[in-house]
Amino acid sequence: MTTAATSSPPSPAATPSLISGRGTGRSGDRIFSVLTRGSGALVVVLVVLTGAFLLWKSVPSLLDDDVNFITSRVWQPAANPPAFGIAALLYTTVLSSVLALLMAVPVSVGVALFLTQCAPRRLATPLGYLVDLLAAVPSIIYGLWGAFVLGPVIAGTDSGPRRAIEDALGWIPLFSSTSVARGNVFLASVVLAIMILPIVTAISREVFLQVPRANIEAALALGATRWETIRVSVLPFGKPGVITASMLGLGRALGETIAVTIILSQPSSLEDFNFSVFYGGETFASKIANNASEFSTPQKTGAYIAAGLVLFVVTFLVNALARVFISRRGDV
Amino acid sequence: MAVVTSSPPAPTKRLLESESAGRRARNRLATVLMAACLLIAMLPLIWILWTVVSRGAGLLGDSTWWTNSQRGITSRRVGGGAYHAIVGTLVMALMTAVISVPIAIGTAIYLVEYGRGRFAKLVTFMVDVLTGIPSIVAALFIYALWVTAFGFQRVSFAVSLALVLLMVPVVVRSTEEMLRLVPRDLREASYALGVPRWKTIVKVVLPTAFSGIVTGIMLGLARVMGETAPLLILGPYTSSINLNPFDGNMAALPTFINQDRNNQALDPAFDRVWAAALTLILIVMVLSVLGRLLSRFGTVKK
Image (tube, rainbow over all chains, first blue to last red; front, side, top):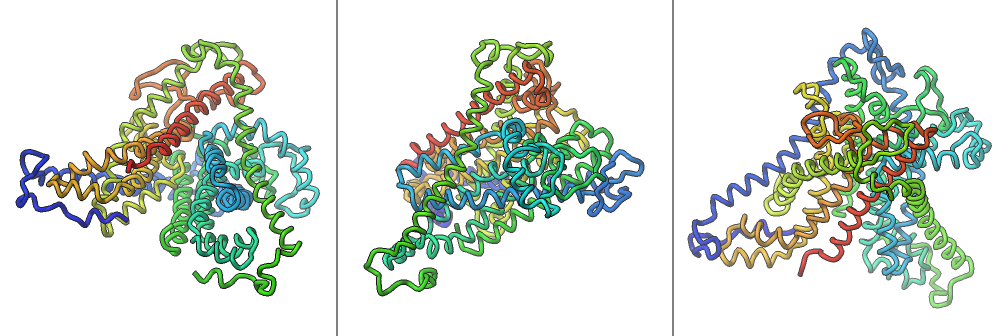
């Protein structure tokens, strides 16, 4: 924290202003402070307006909704009266994001540990840049690559990795075999995992770098190997930071739009529902994106805005939870 | 820290002896696994770049790619360029930057130089919230405001408004970080000369942190240029050139890609999809690499 704000400038009346030449600069100070405070206020207003507008525009449709908004899988916002529920969207969104998180976090922690604890510094910096570059790839390109290049390799009906999972775990409904090739939640999760990998890695790296030198050296002095040092001093110190990183990654995955939209195939009807990760589906974001051209009546638009509102609330909660872990640990 | 005391029953007897074979093997296994994680993380990057370059580079050599639009060219025909989409992407990015940079720098100055108390905490929290807002939610908000509340058309200016929500937090964060790095001595030396605080900020603090702020702006631009969701909702595609952000449809590289992504059976169209993907990745990567280099060689001058 800088404390510059507390050291107020010397009273201009006592020392004649040297540089400004004329006047005391008091009014300039006031204007400037109002302007910067105003920008801060604008940011607050923007977030509040986002919630308020989504709520305002979705409430009329929600009031007309013929089915339970939370528990129904029906999606017919154009019907009269409209009938729409988010159960199926919520399932696919949460399933794909949580699977992505389960795949991304171990790899991210491994990368972060390797870069901060094992690799020599002159190698770690450029390698870190390369991992960061993953974050610079636009999501539509992840979508194209995932659907047309990665998909046939890992998620097609006769692809090796998918067959292996189906053979080993197929008796669990979550992994039961389906005929959906490529456009399944499994492929979407893998691509999401790759997309959130750089952010989880970057934050984990930052945290691991802050482990006090003394903790590491104490462990080494006791004769611990590199790995034992990591286990007893680096990981316990970094755990809250890794949890925060995972939450932020989860927030990213929940709201990812175009990559998921390109990859997932939509089931012909929502009644046609399957728990399996090898089935298609739609997330909140992909549902909205797929129907962006159909915002014709306020009633229909309201249904999609209601889905967006739920997404807003969910990501807000996840991100707020991430901050709780940071603040509990002091400053990261 | 109490962490170290919870170390496993340390082999006190053999402290100075070499480690047992089992511990050494575990150490080696862990190191190999961590290195493997790095390889797993690198694999998609290389694979994606190779895919996009090998499939898209062909068209980028044509001069028409950089000078022509897609006007009058159907999905079955070869030809045309990406000029309309490149220009559209740049126009929208420029508008976004013009709106968000002053807001973001103002907010960062407020947080670092003035901000104390509850309101500053609130602003910090809201910047965090903005960082986590999904782009499709930002787009829906602007849709609710611009189209349903104001009754305006879907134009590229509305896209820029949605992108502002995504760019502001990136620039605030990096500017804030840079401003905090500016040594207090510089500020106090300036105050000692009788310079008012606002002039100190404008003439001393901001120039010192300048390169870091530019880095933040470039990273923010790289993020918004690759966004597709706001374009889907607010910026319909067109195959012609349009430079007016307030009237008519304007193309952008992501929507150009999105337009023909279902035509993988039509070679001419799908070749253009990959070429547009390469163009987009080039622009975004150049921006973010430049931004990072700049921050490396030009952090706050001491």
